Image (cartoon, rainbow, N blue to C red; front, side, top):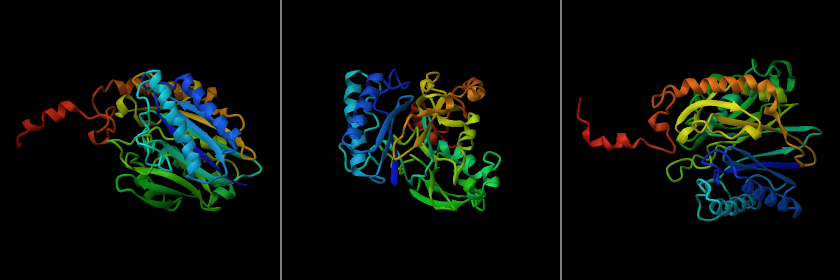
Length: 363
């Protein structure tokens, strides 16, 4: 059975500040998705949160970029924004930048990742949720999962993985894309995705079967109201086992709290902490950035119970290391590399430097 897994996310109001999603907002979203399942619009759907972002995880047979599924997401976010405004939540409706729904959430504010698959007898899928991270945050973990044998021994030991994977990389500045294959073009790939502010992995594809193995909600690079709304704090979908990395191989990159851009005012680098969903409420300096891993055993299109994979105490060391890294980065104050370079800042500028513009003289 061909089916599509859609993850559509937006920030429609933070509780308190940018730290969490209000329980009433989550309950409203869960009820809206339950009605869509009951009405037969979709097979199954769940709402989850990471920080102040709502993530709709929807299983259906309508294909990618389907108007009805995207309308469901848009109207759920739109009605949720009304609740957020009534509750006085921070930034109510901030990711809904379009005046009205135009057939797709693409370019309208919310982020989306969609993957179409033929369900196998056993279909384990991971959905990663993030908060306080920039668009290309998944570049490094996806490379480790699908191209690094030090992380994924299946690239050496498993025949289906031995042919390698193709990476679809988007240049968000020039709004263009390229496909590079591994292992033969690994150096060229790293030369691009090592600059995640500009280049972001959109899809990873099996070279053996041509199946999409992973997809990220990096958007199309459309800049809205001066910054990338809804496209930061990305989600990722990763298929596991068989022709793809094992679940443990897909989770292994997050044993290290990589530095990502985000945090306070979307303008600081800090560690990316793997946490259970209940711990995904960044508060210290709007951080540290969080990543949640939910595991689903798809069966006949149904998601079933979500397994909260970073609830594992094996990630305690990564969390402790993230806290130590946060201490070190905070000591830099307004200096790089904690503070992002001026051309990397998405939300804020430096007004004090703008006021000095007329005072410069030739050196």
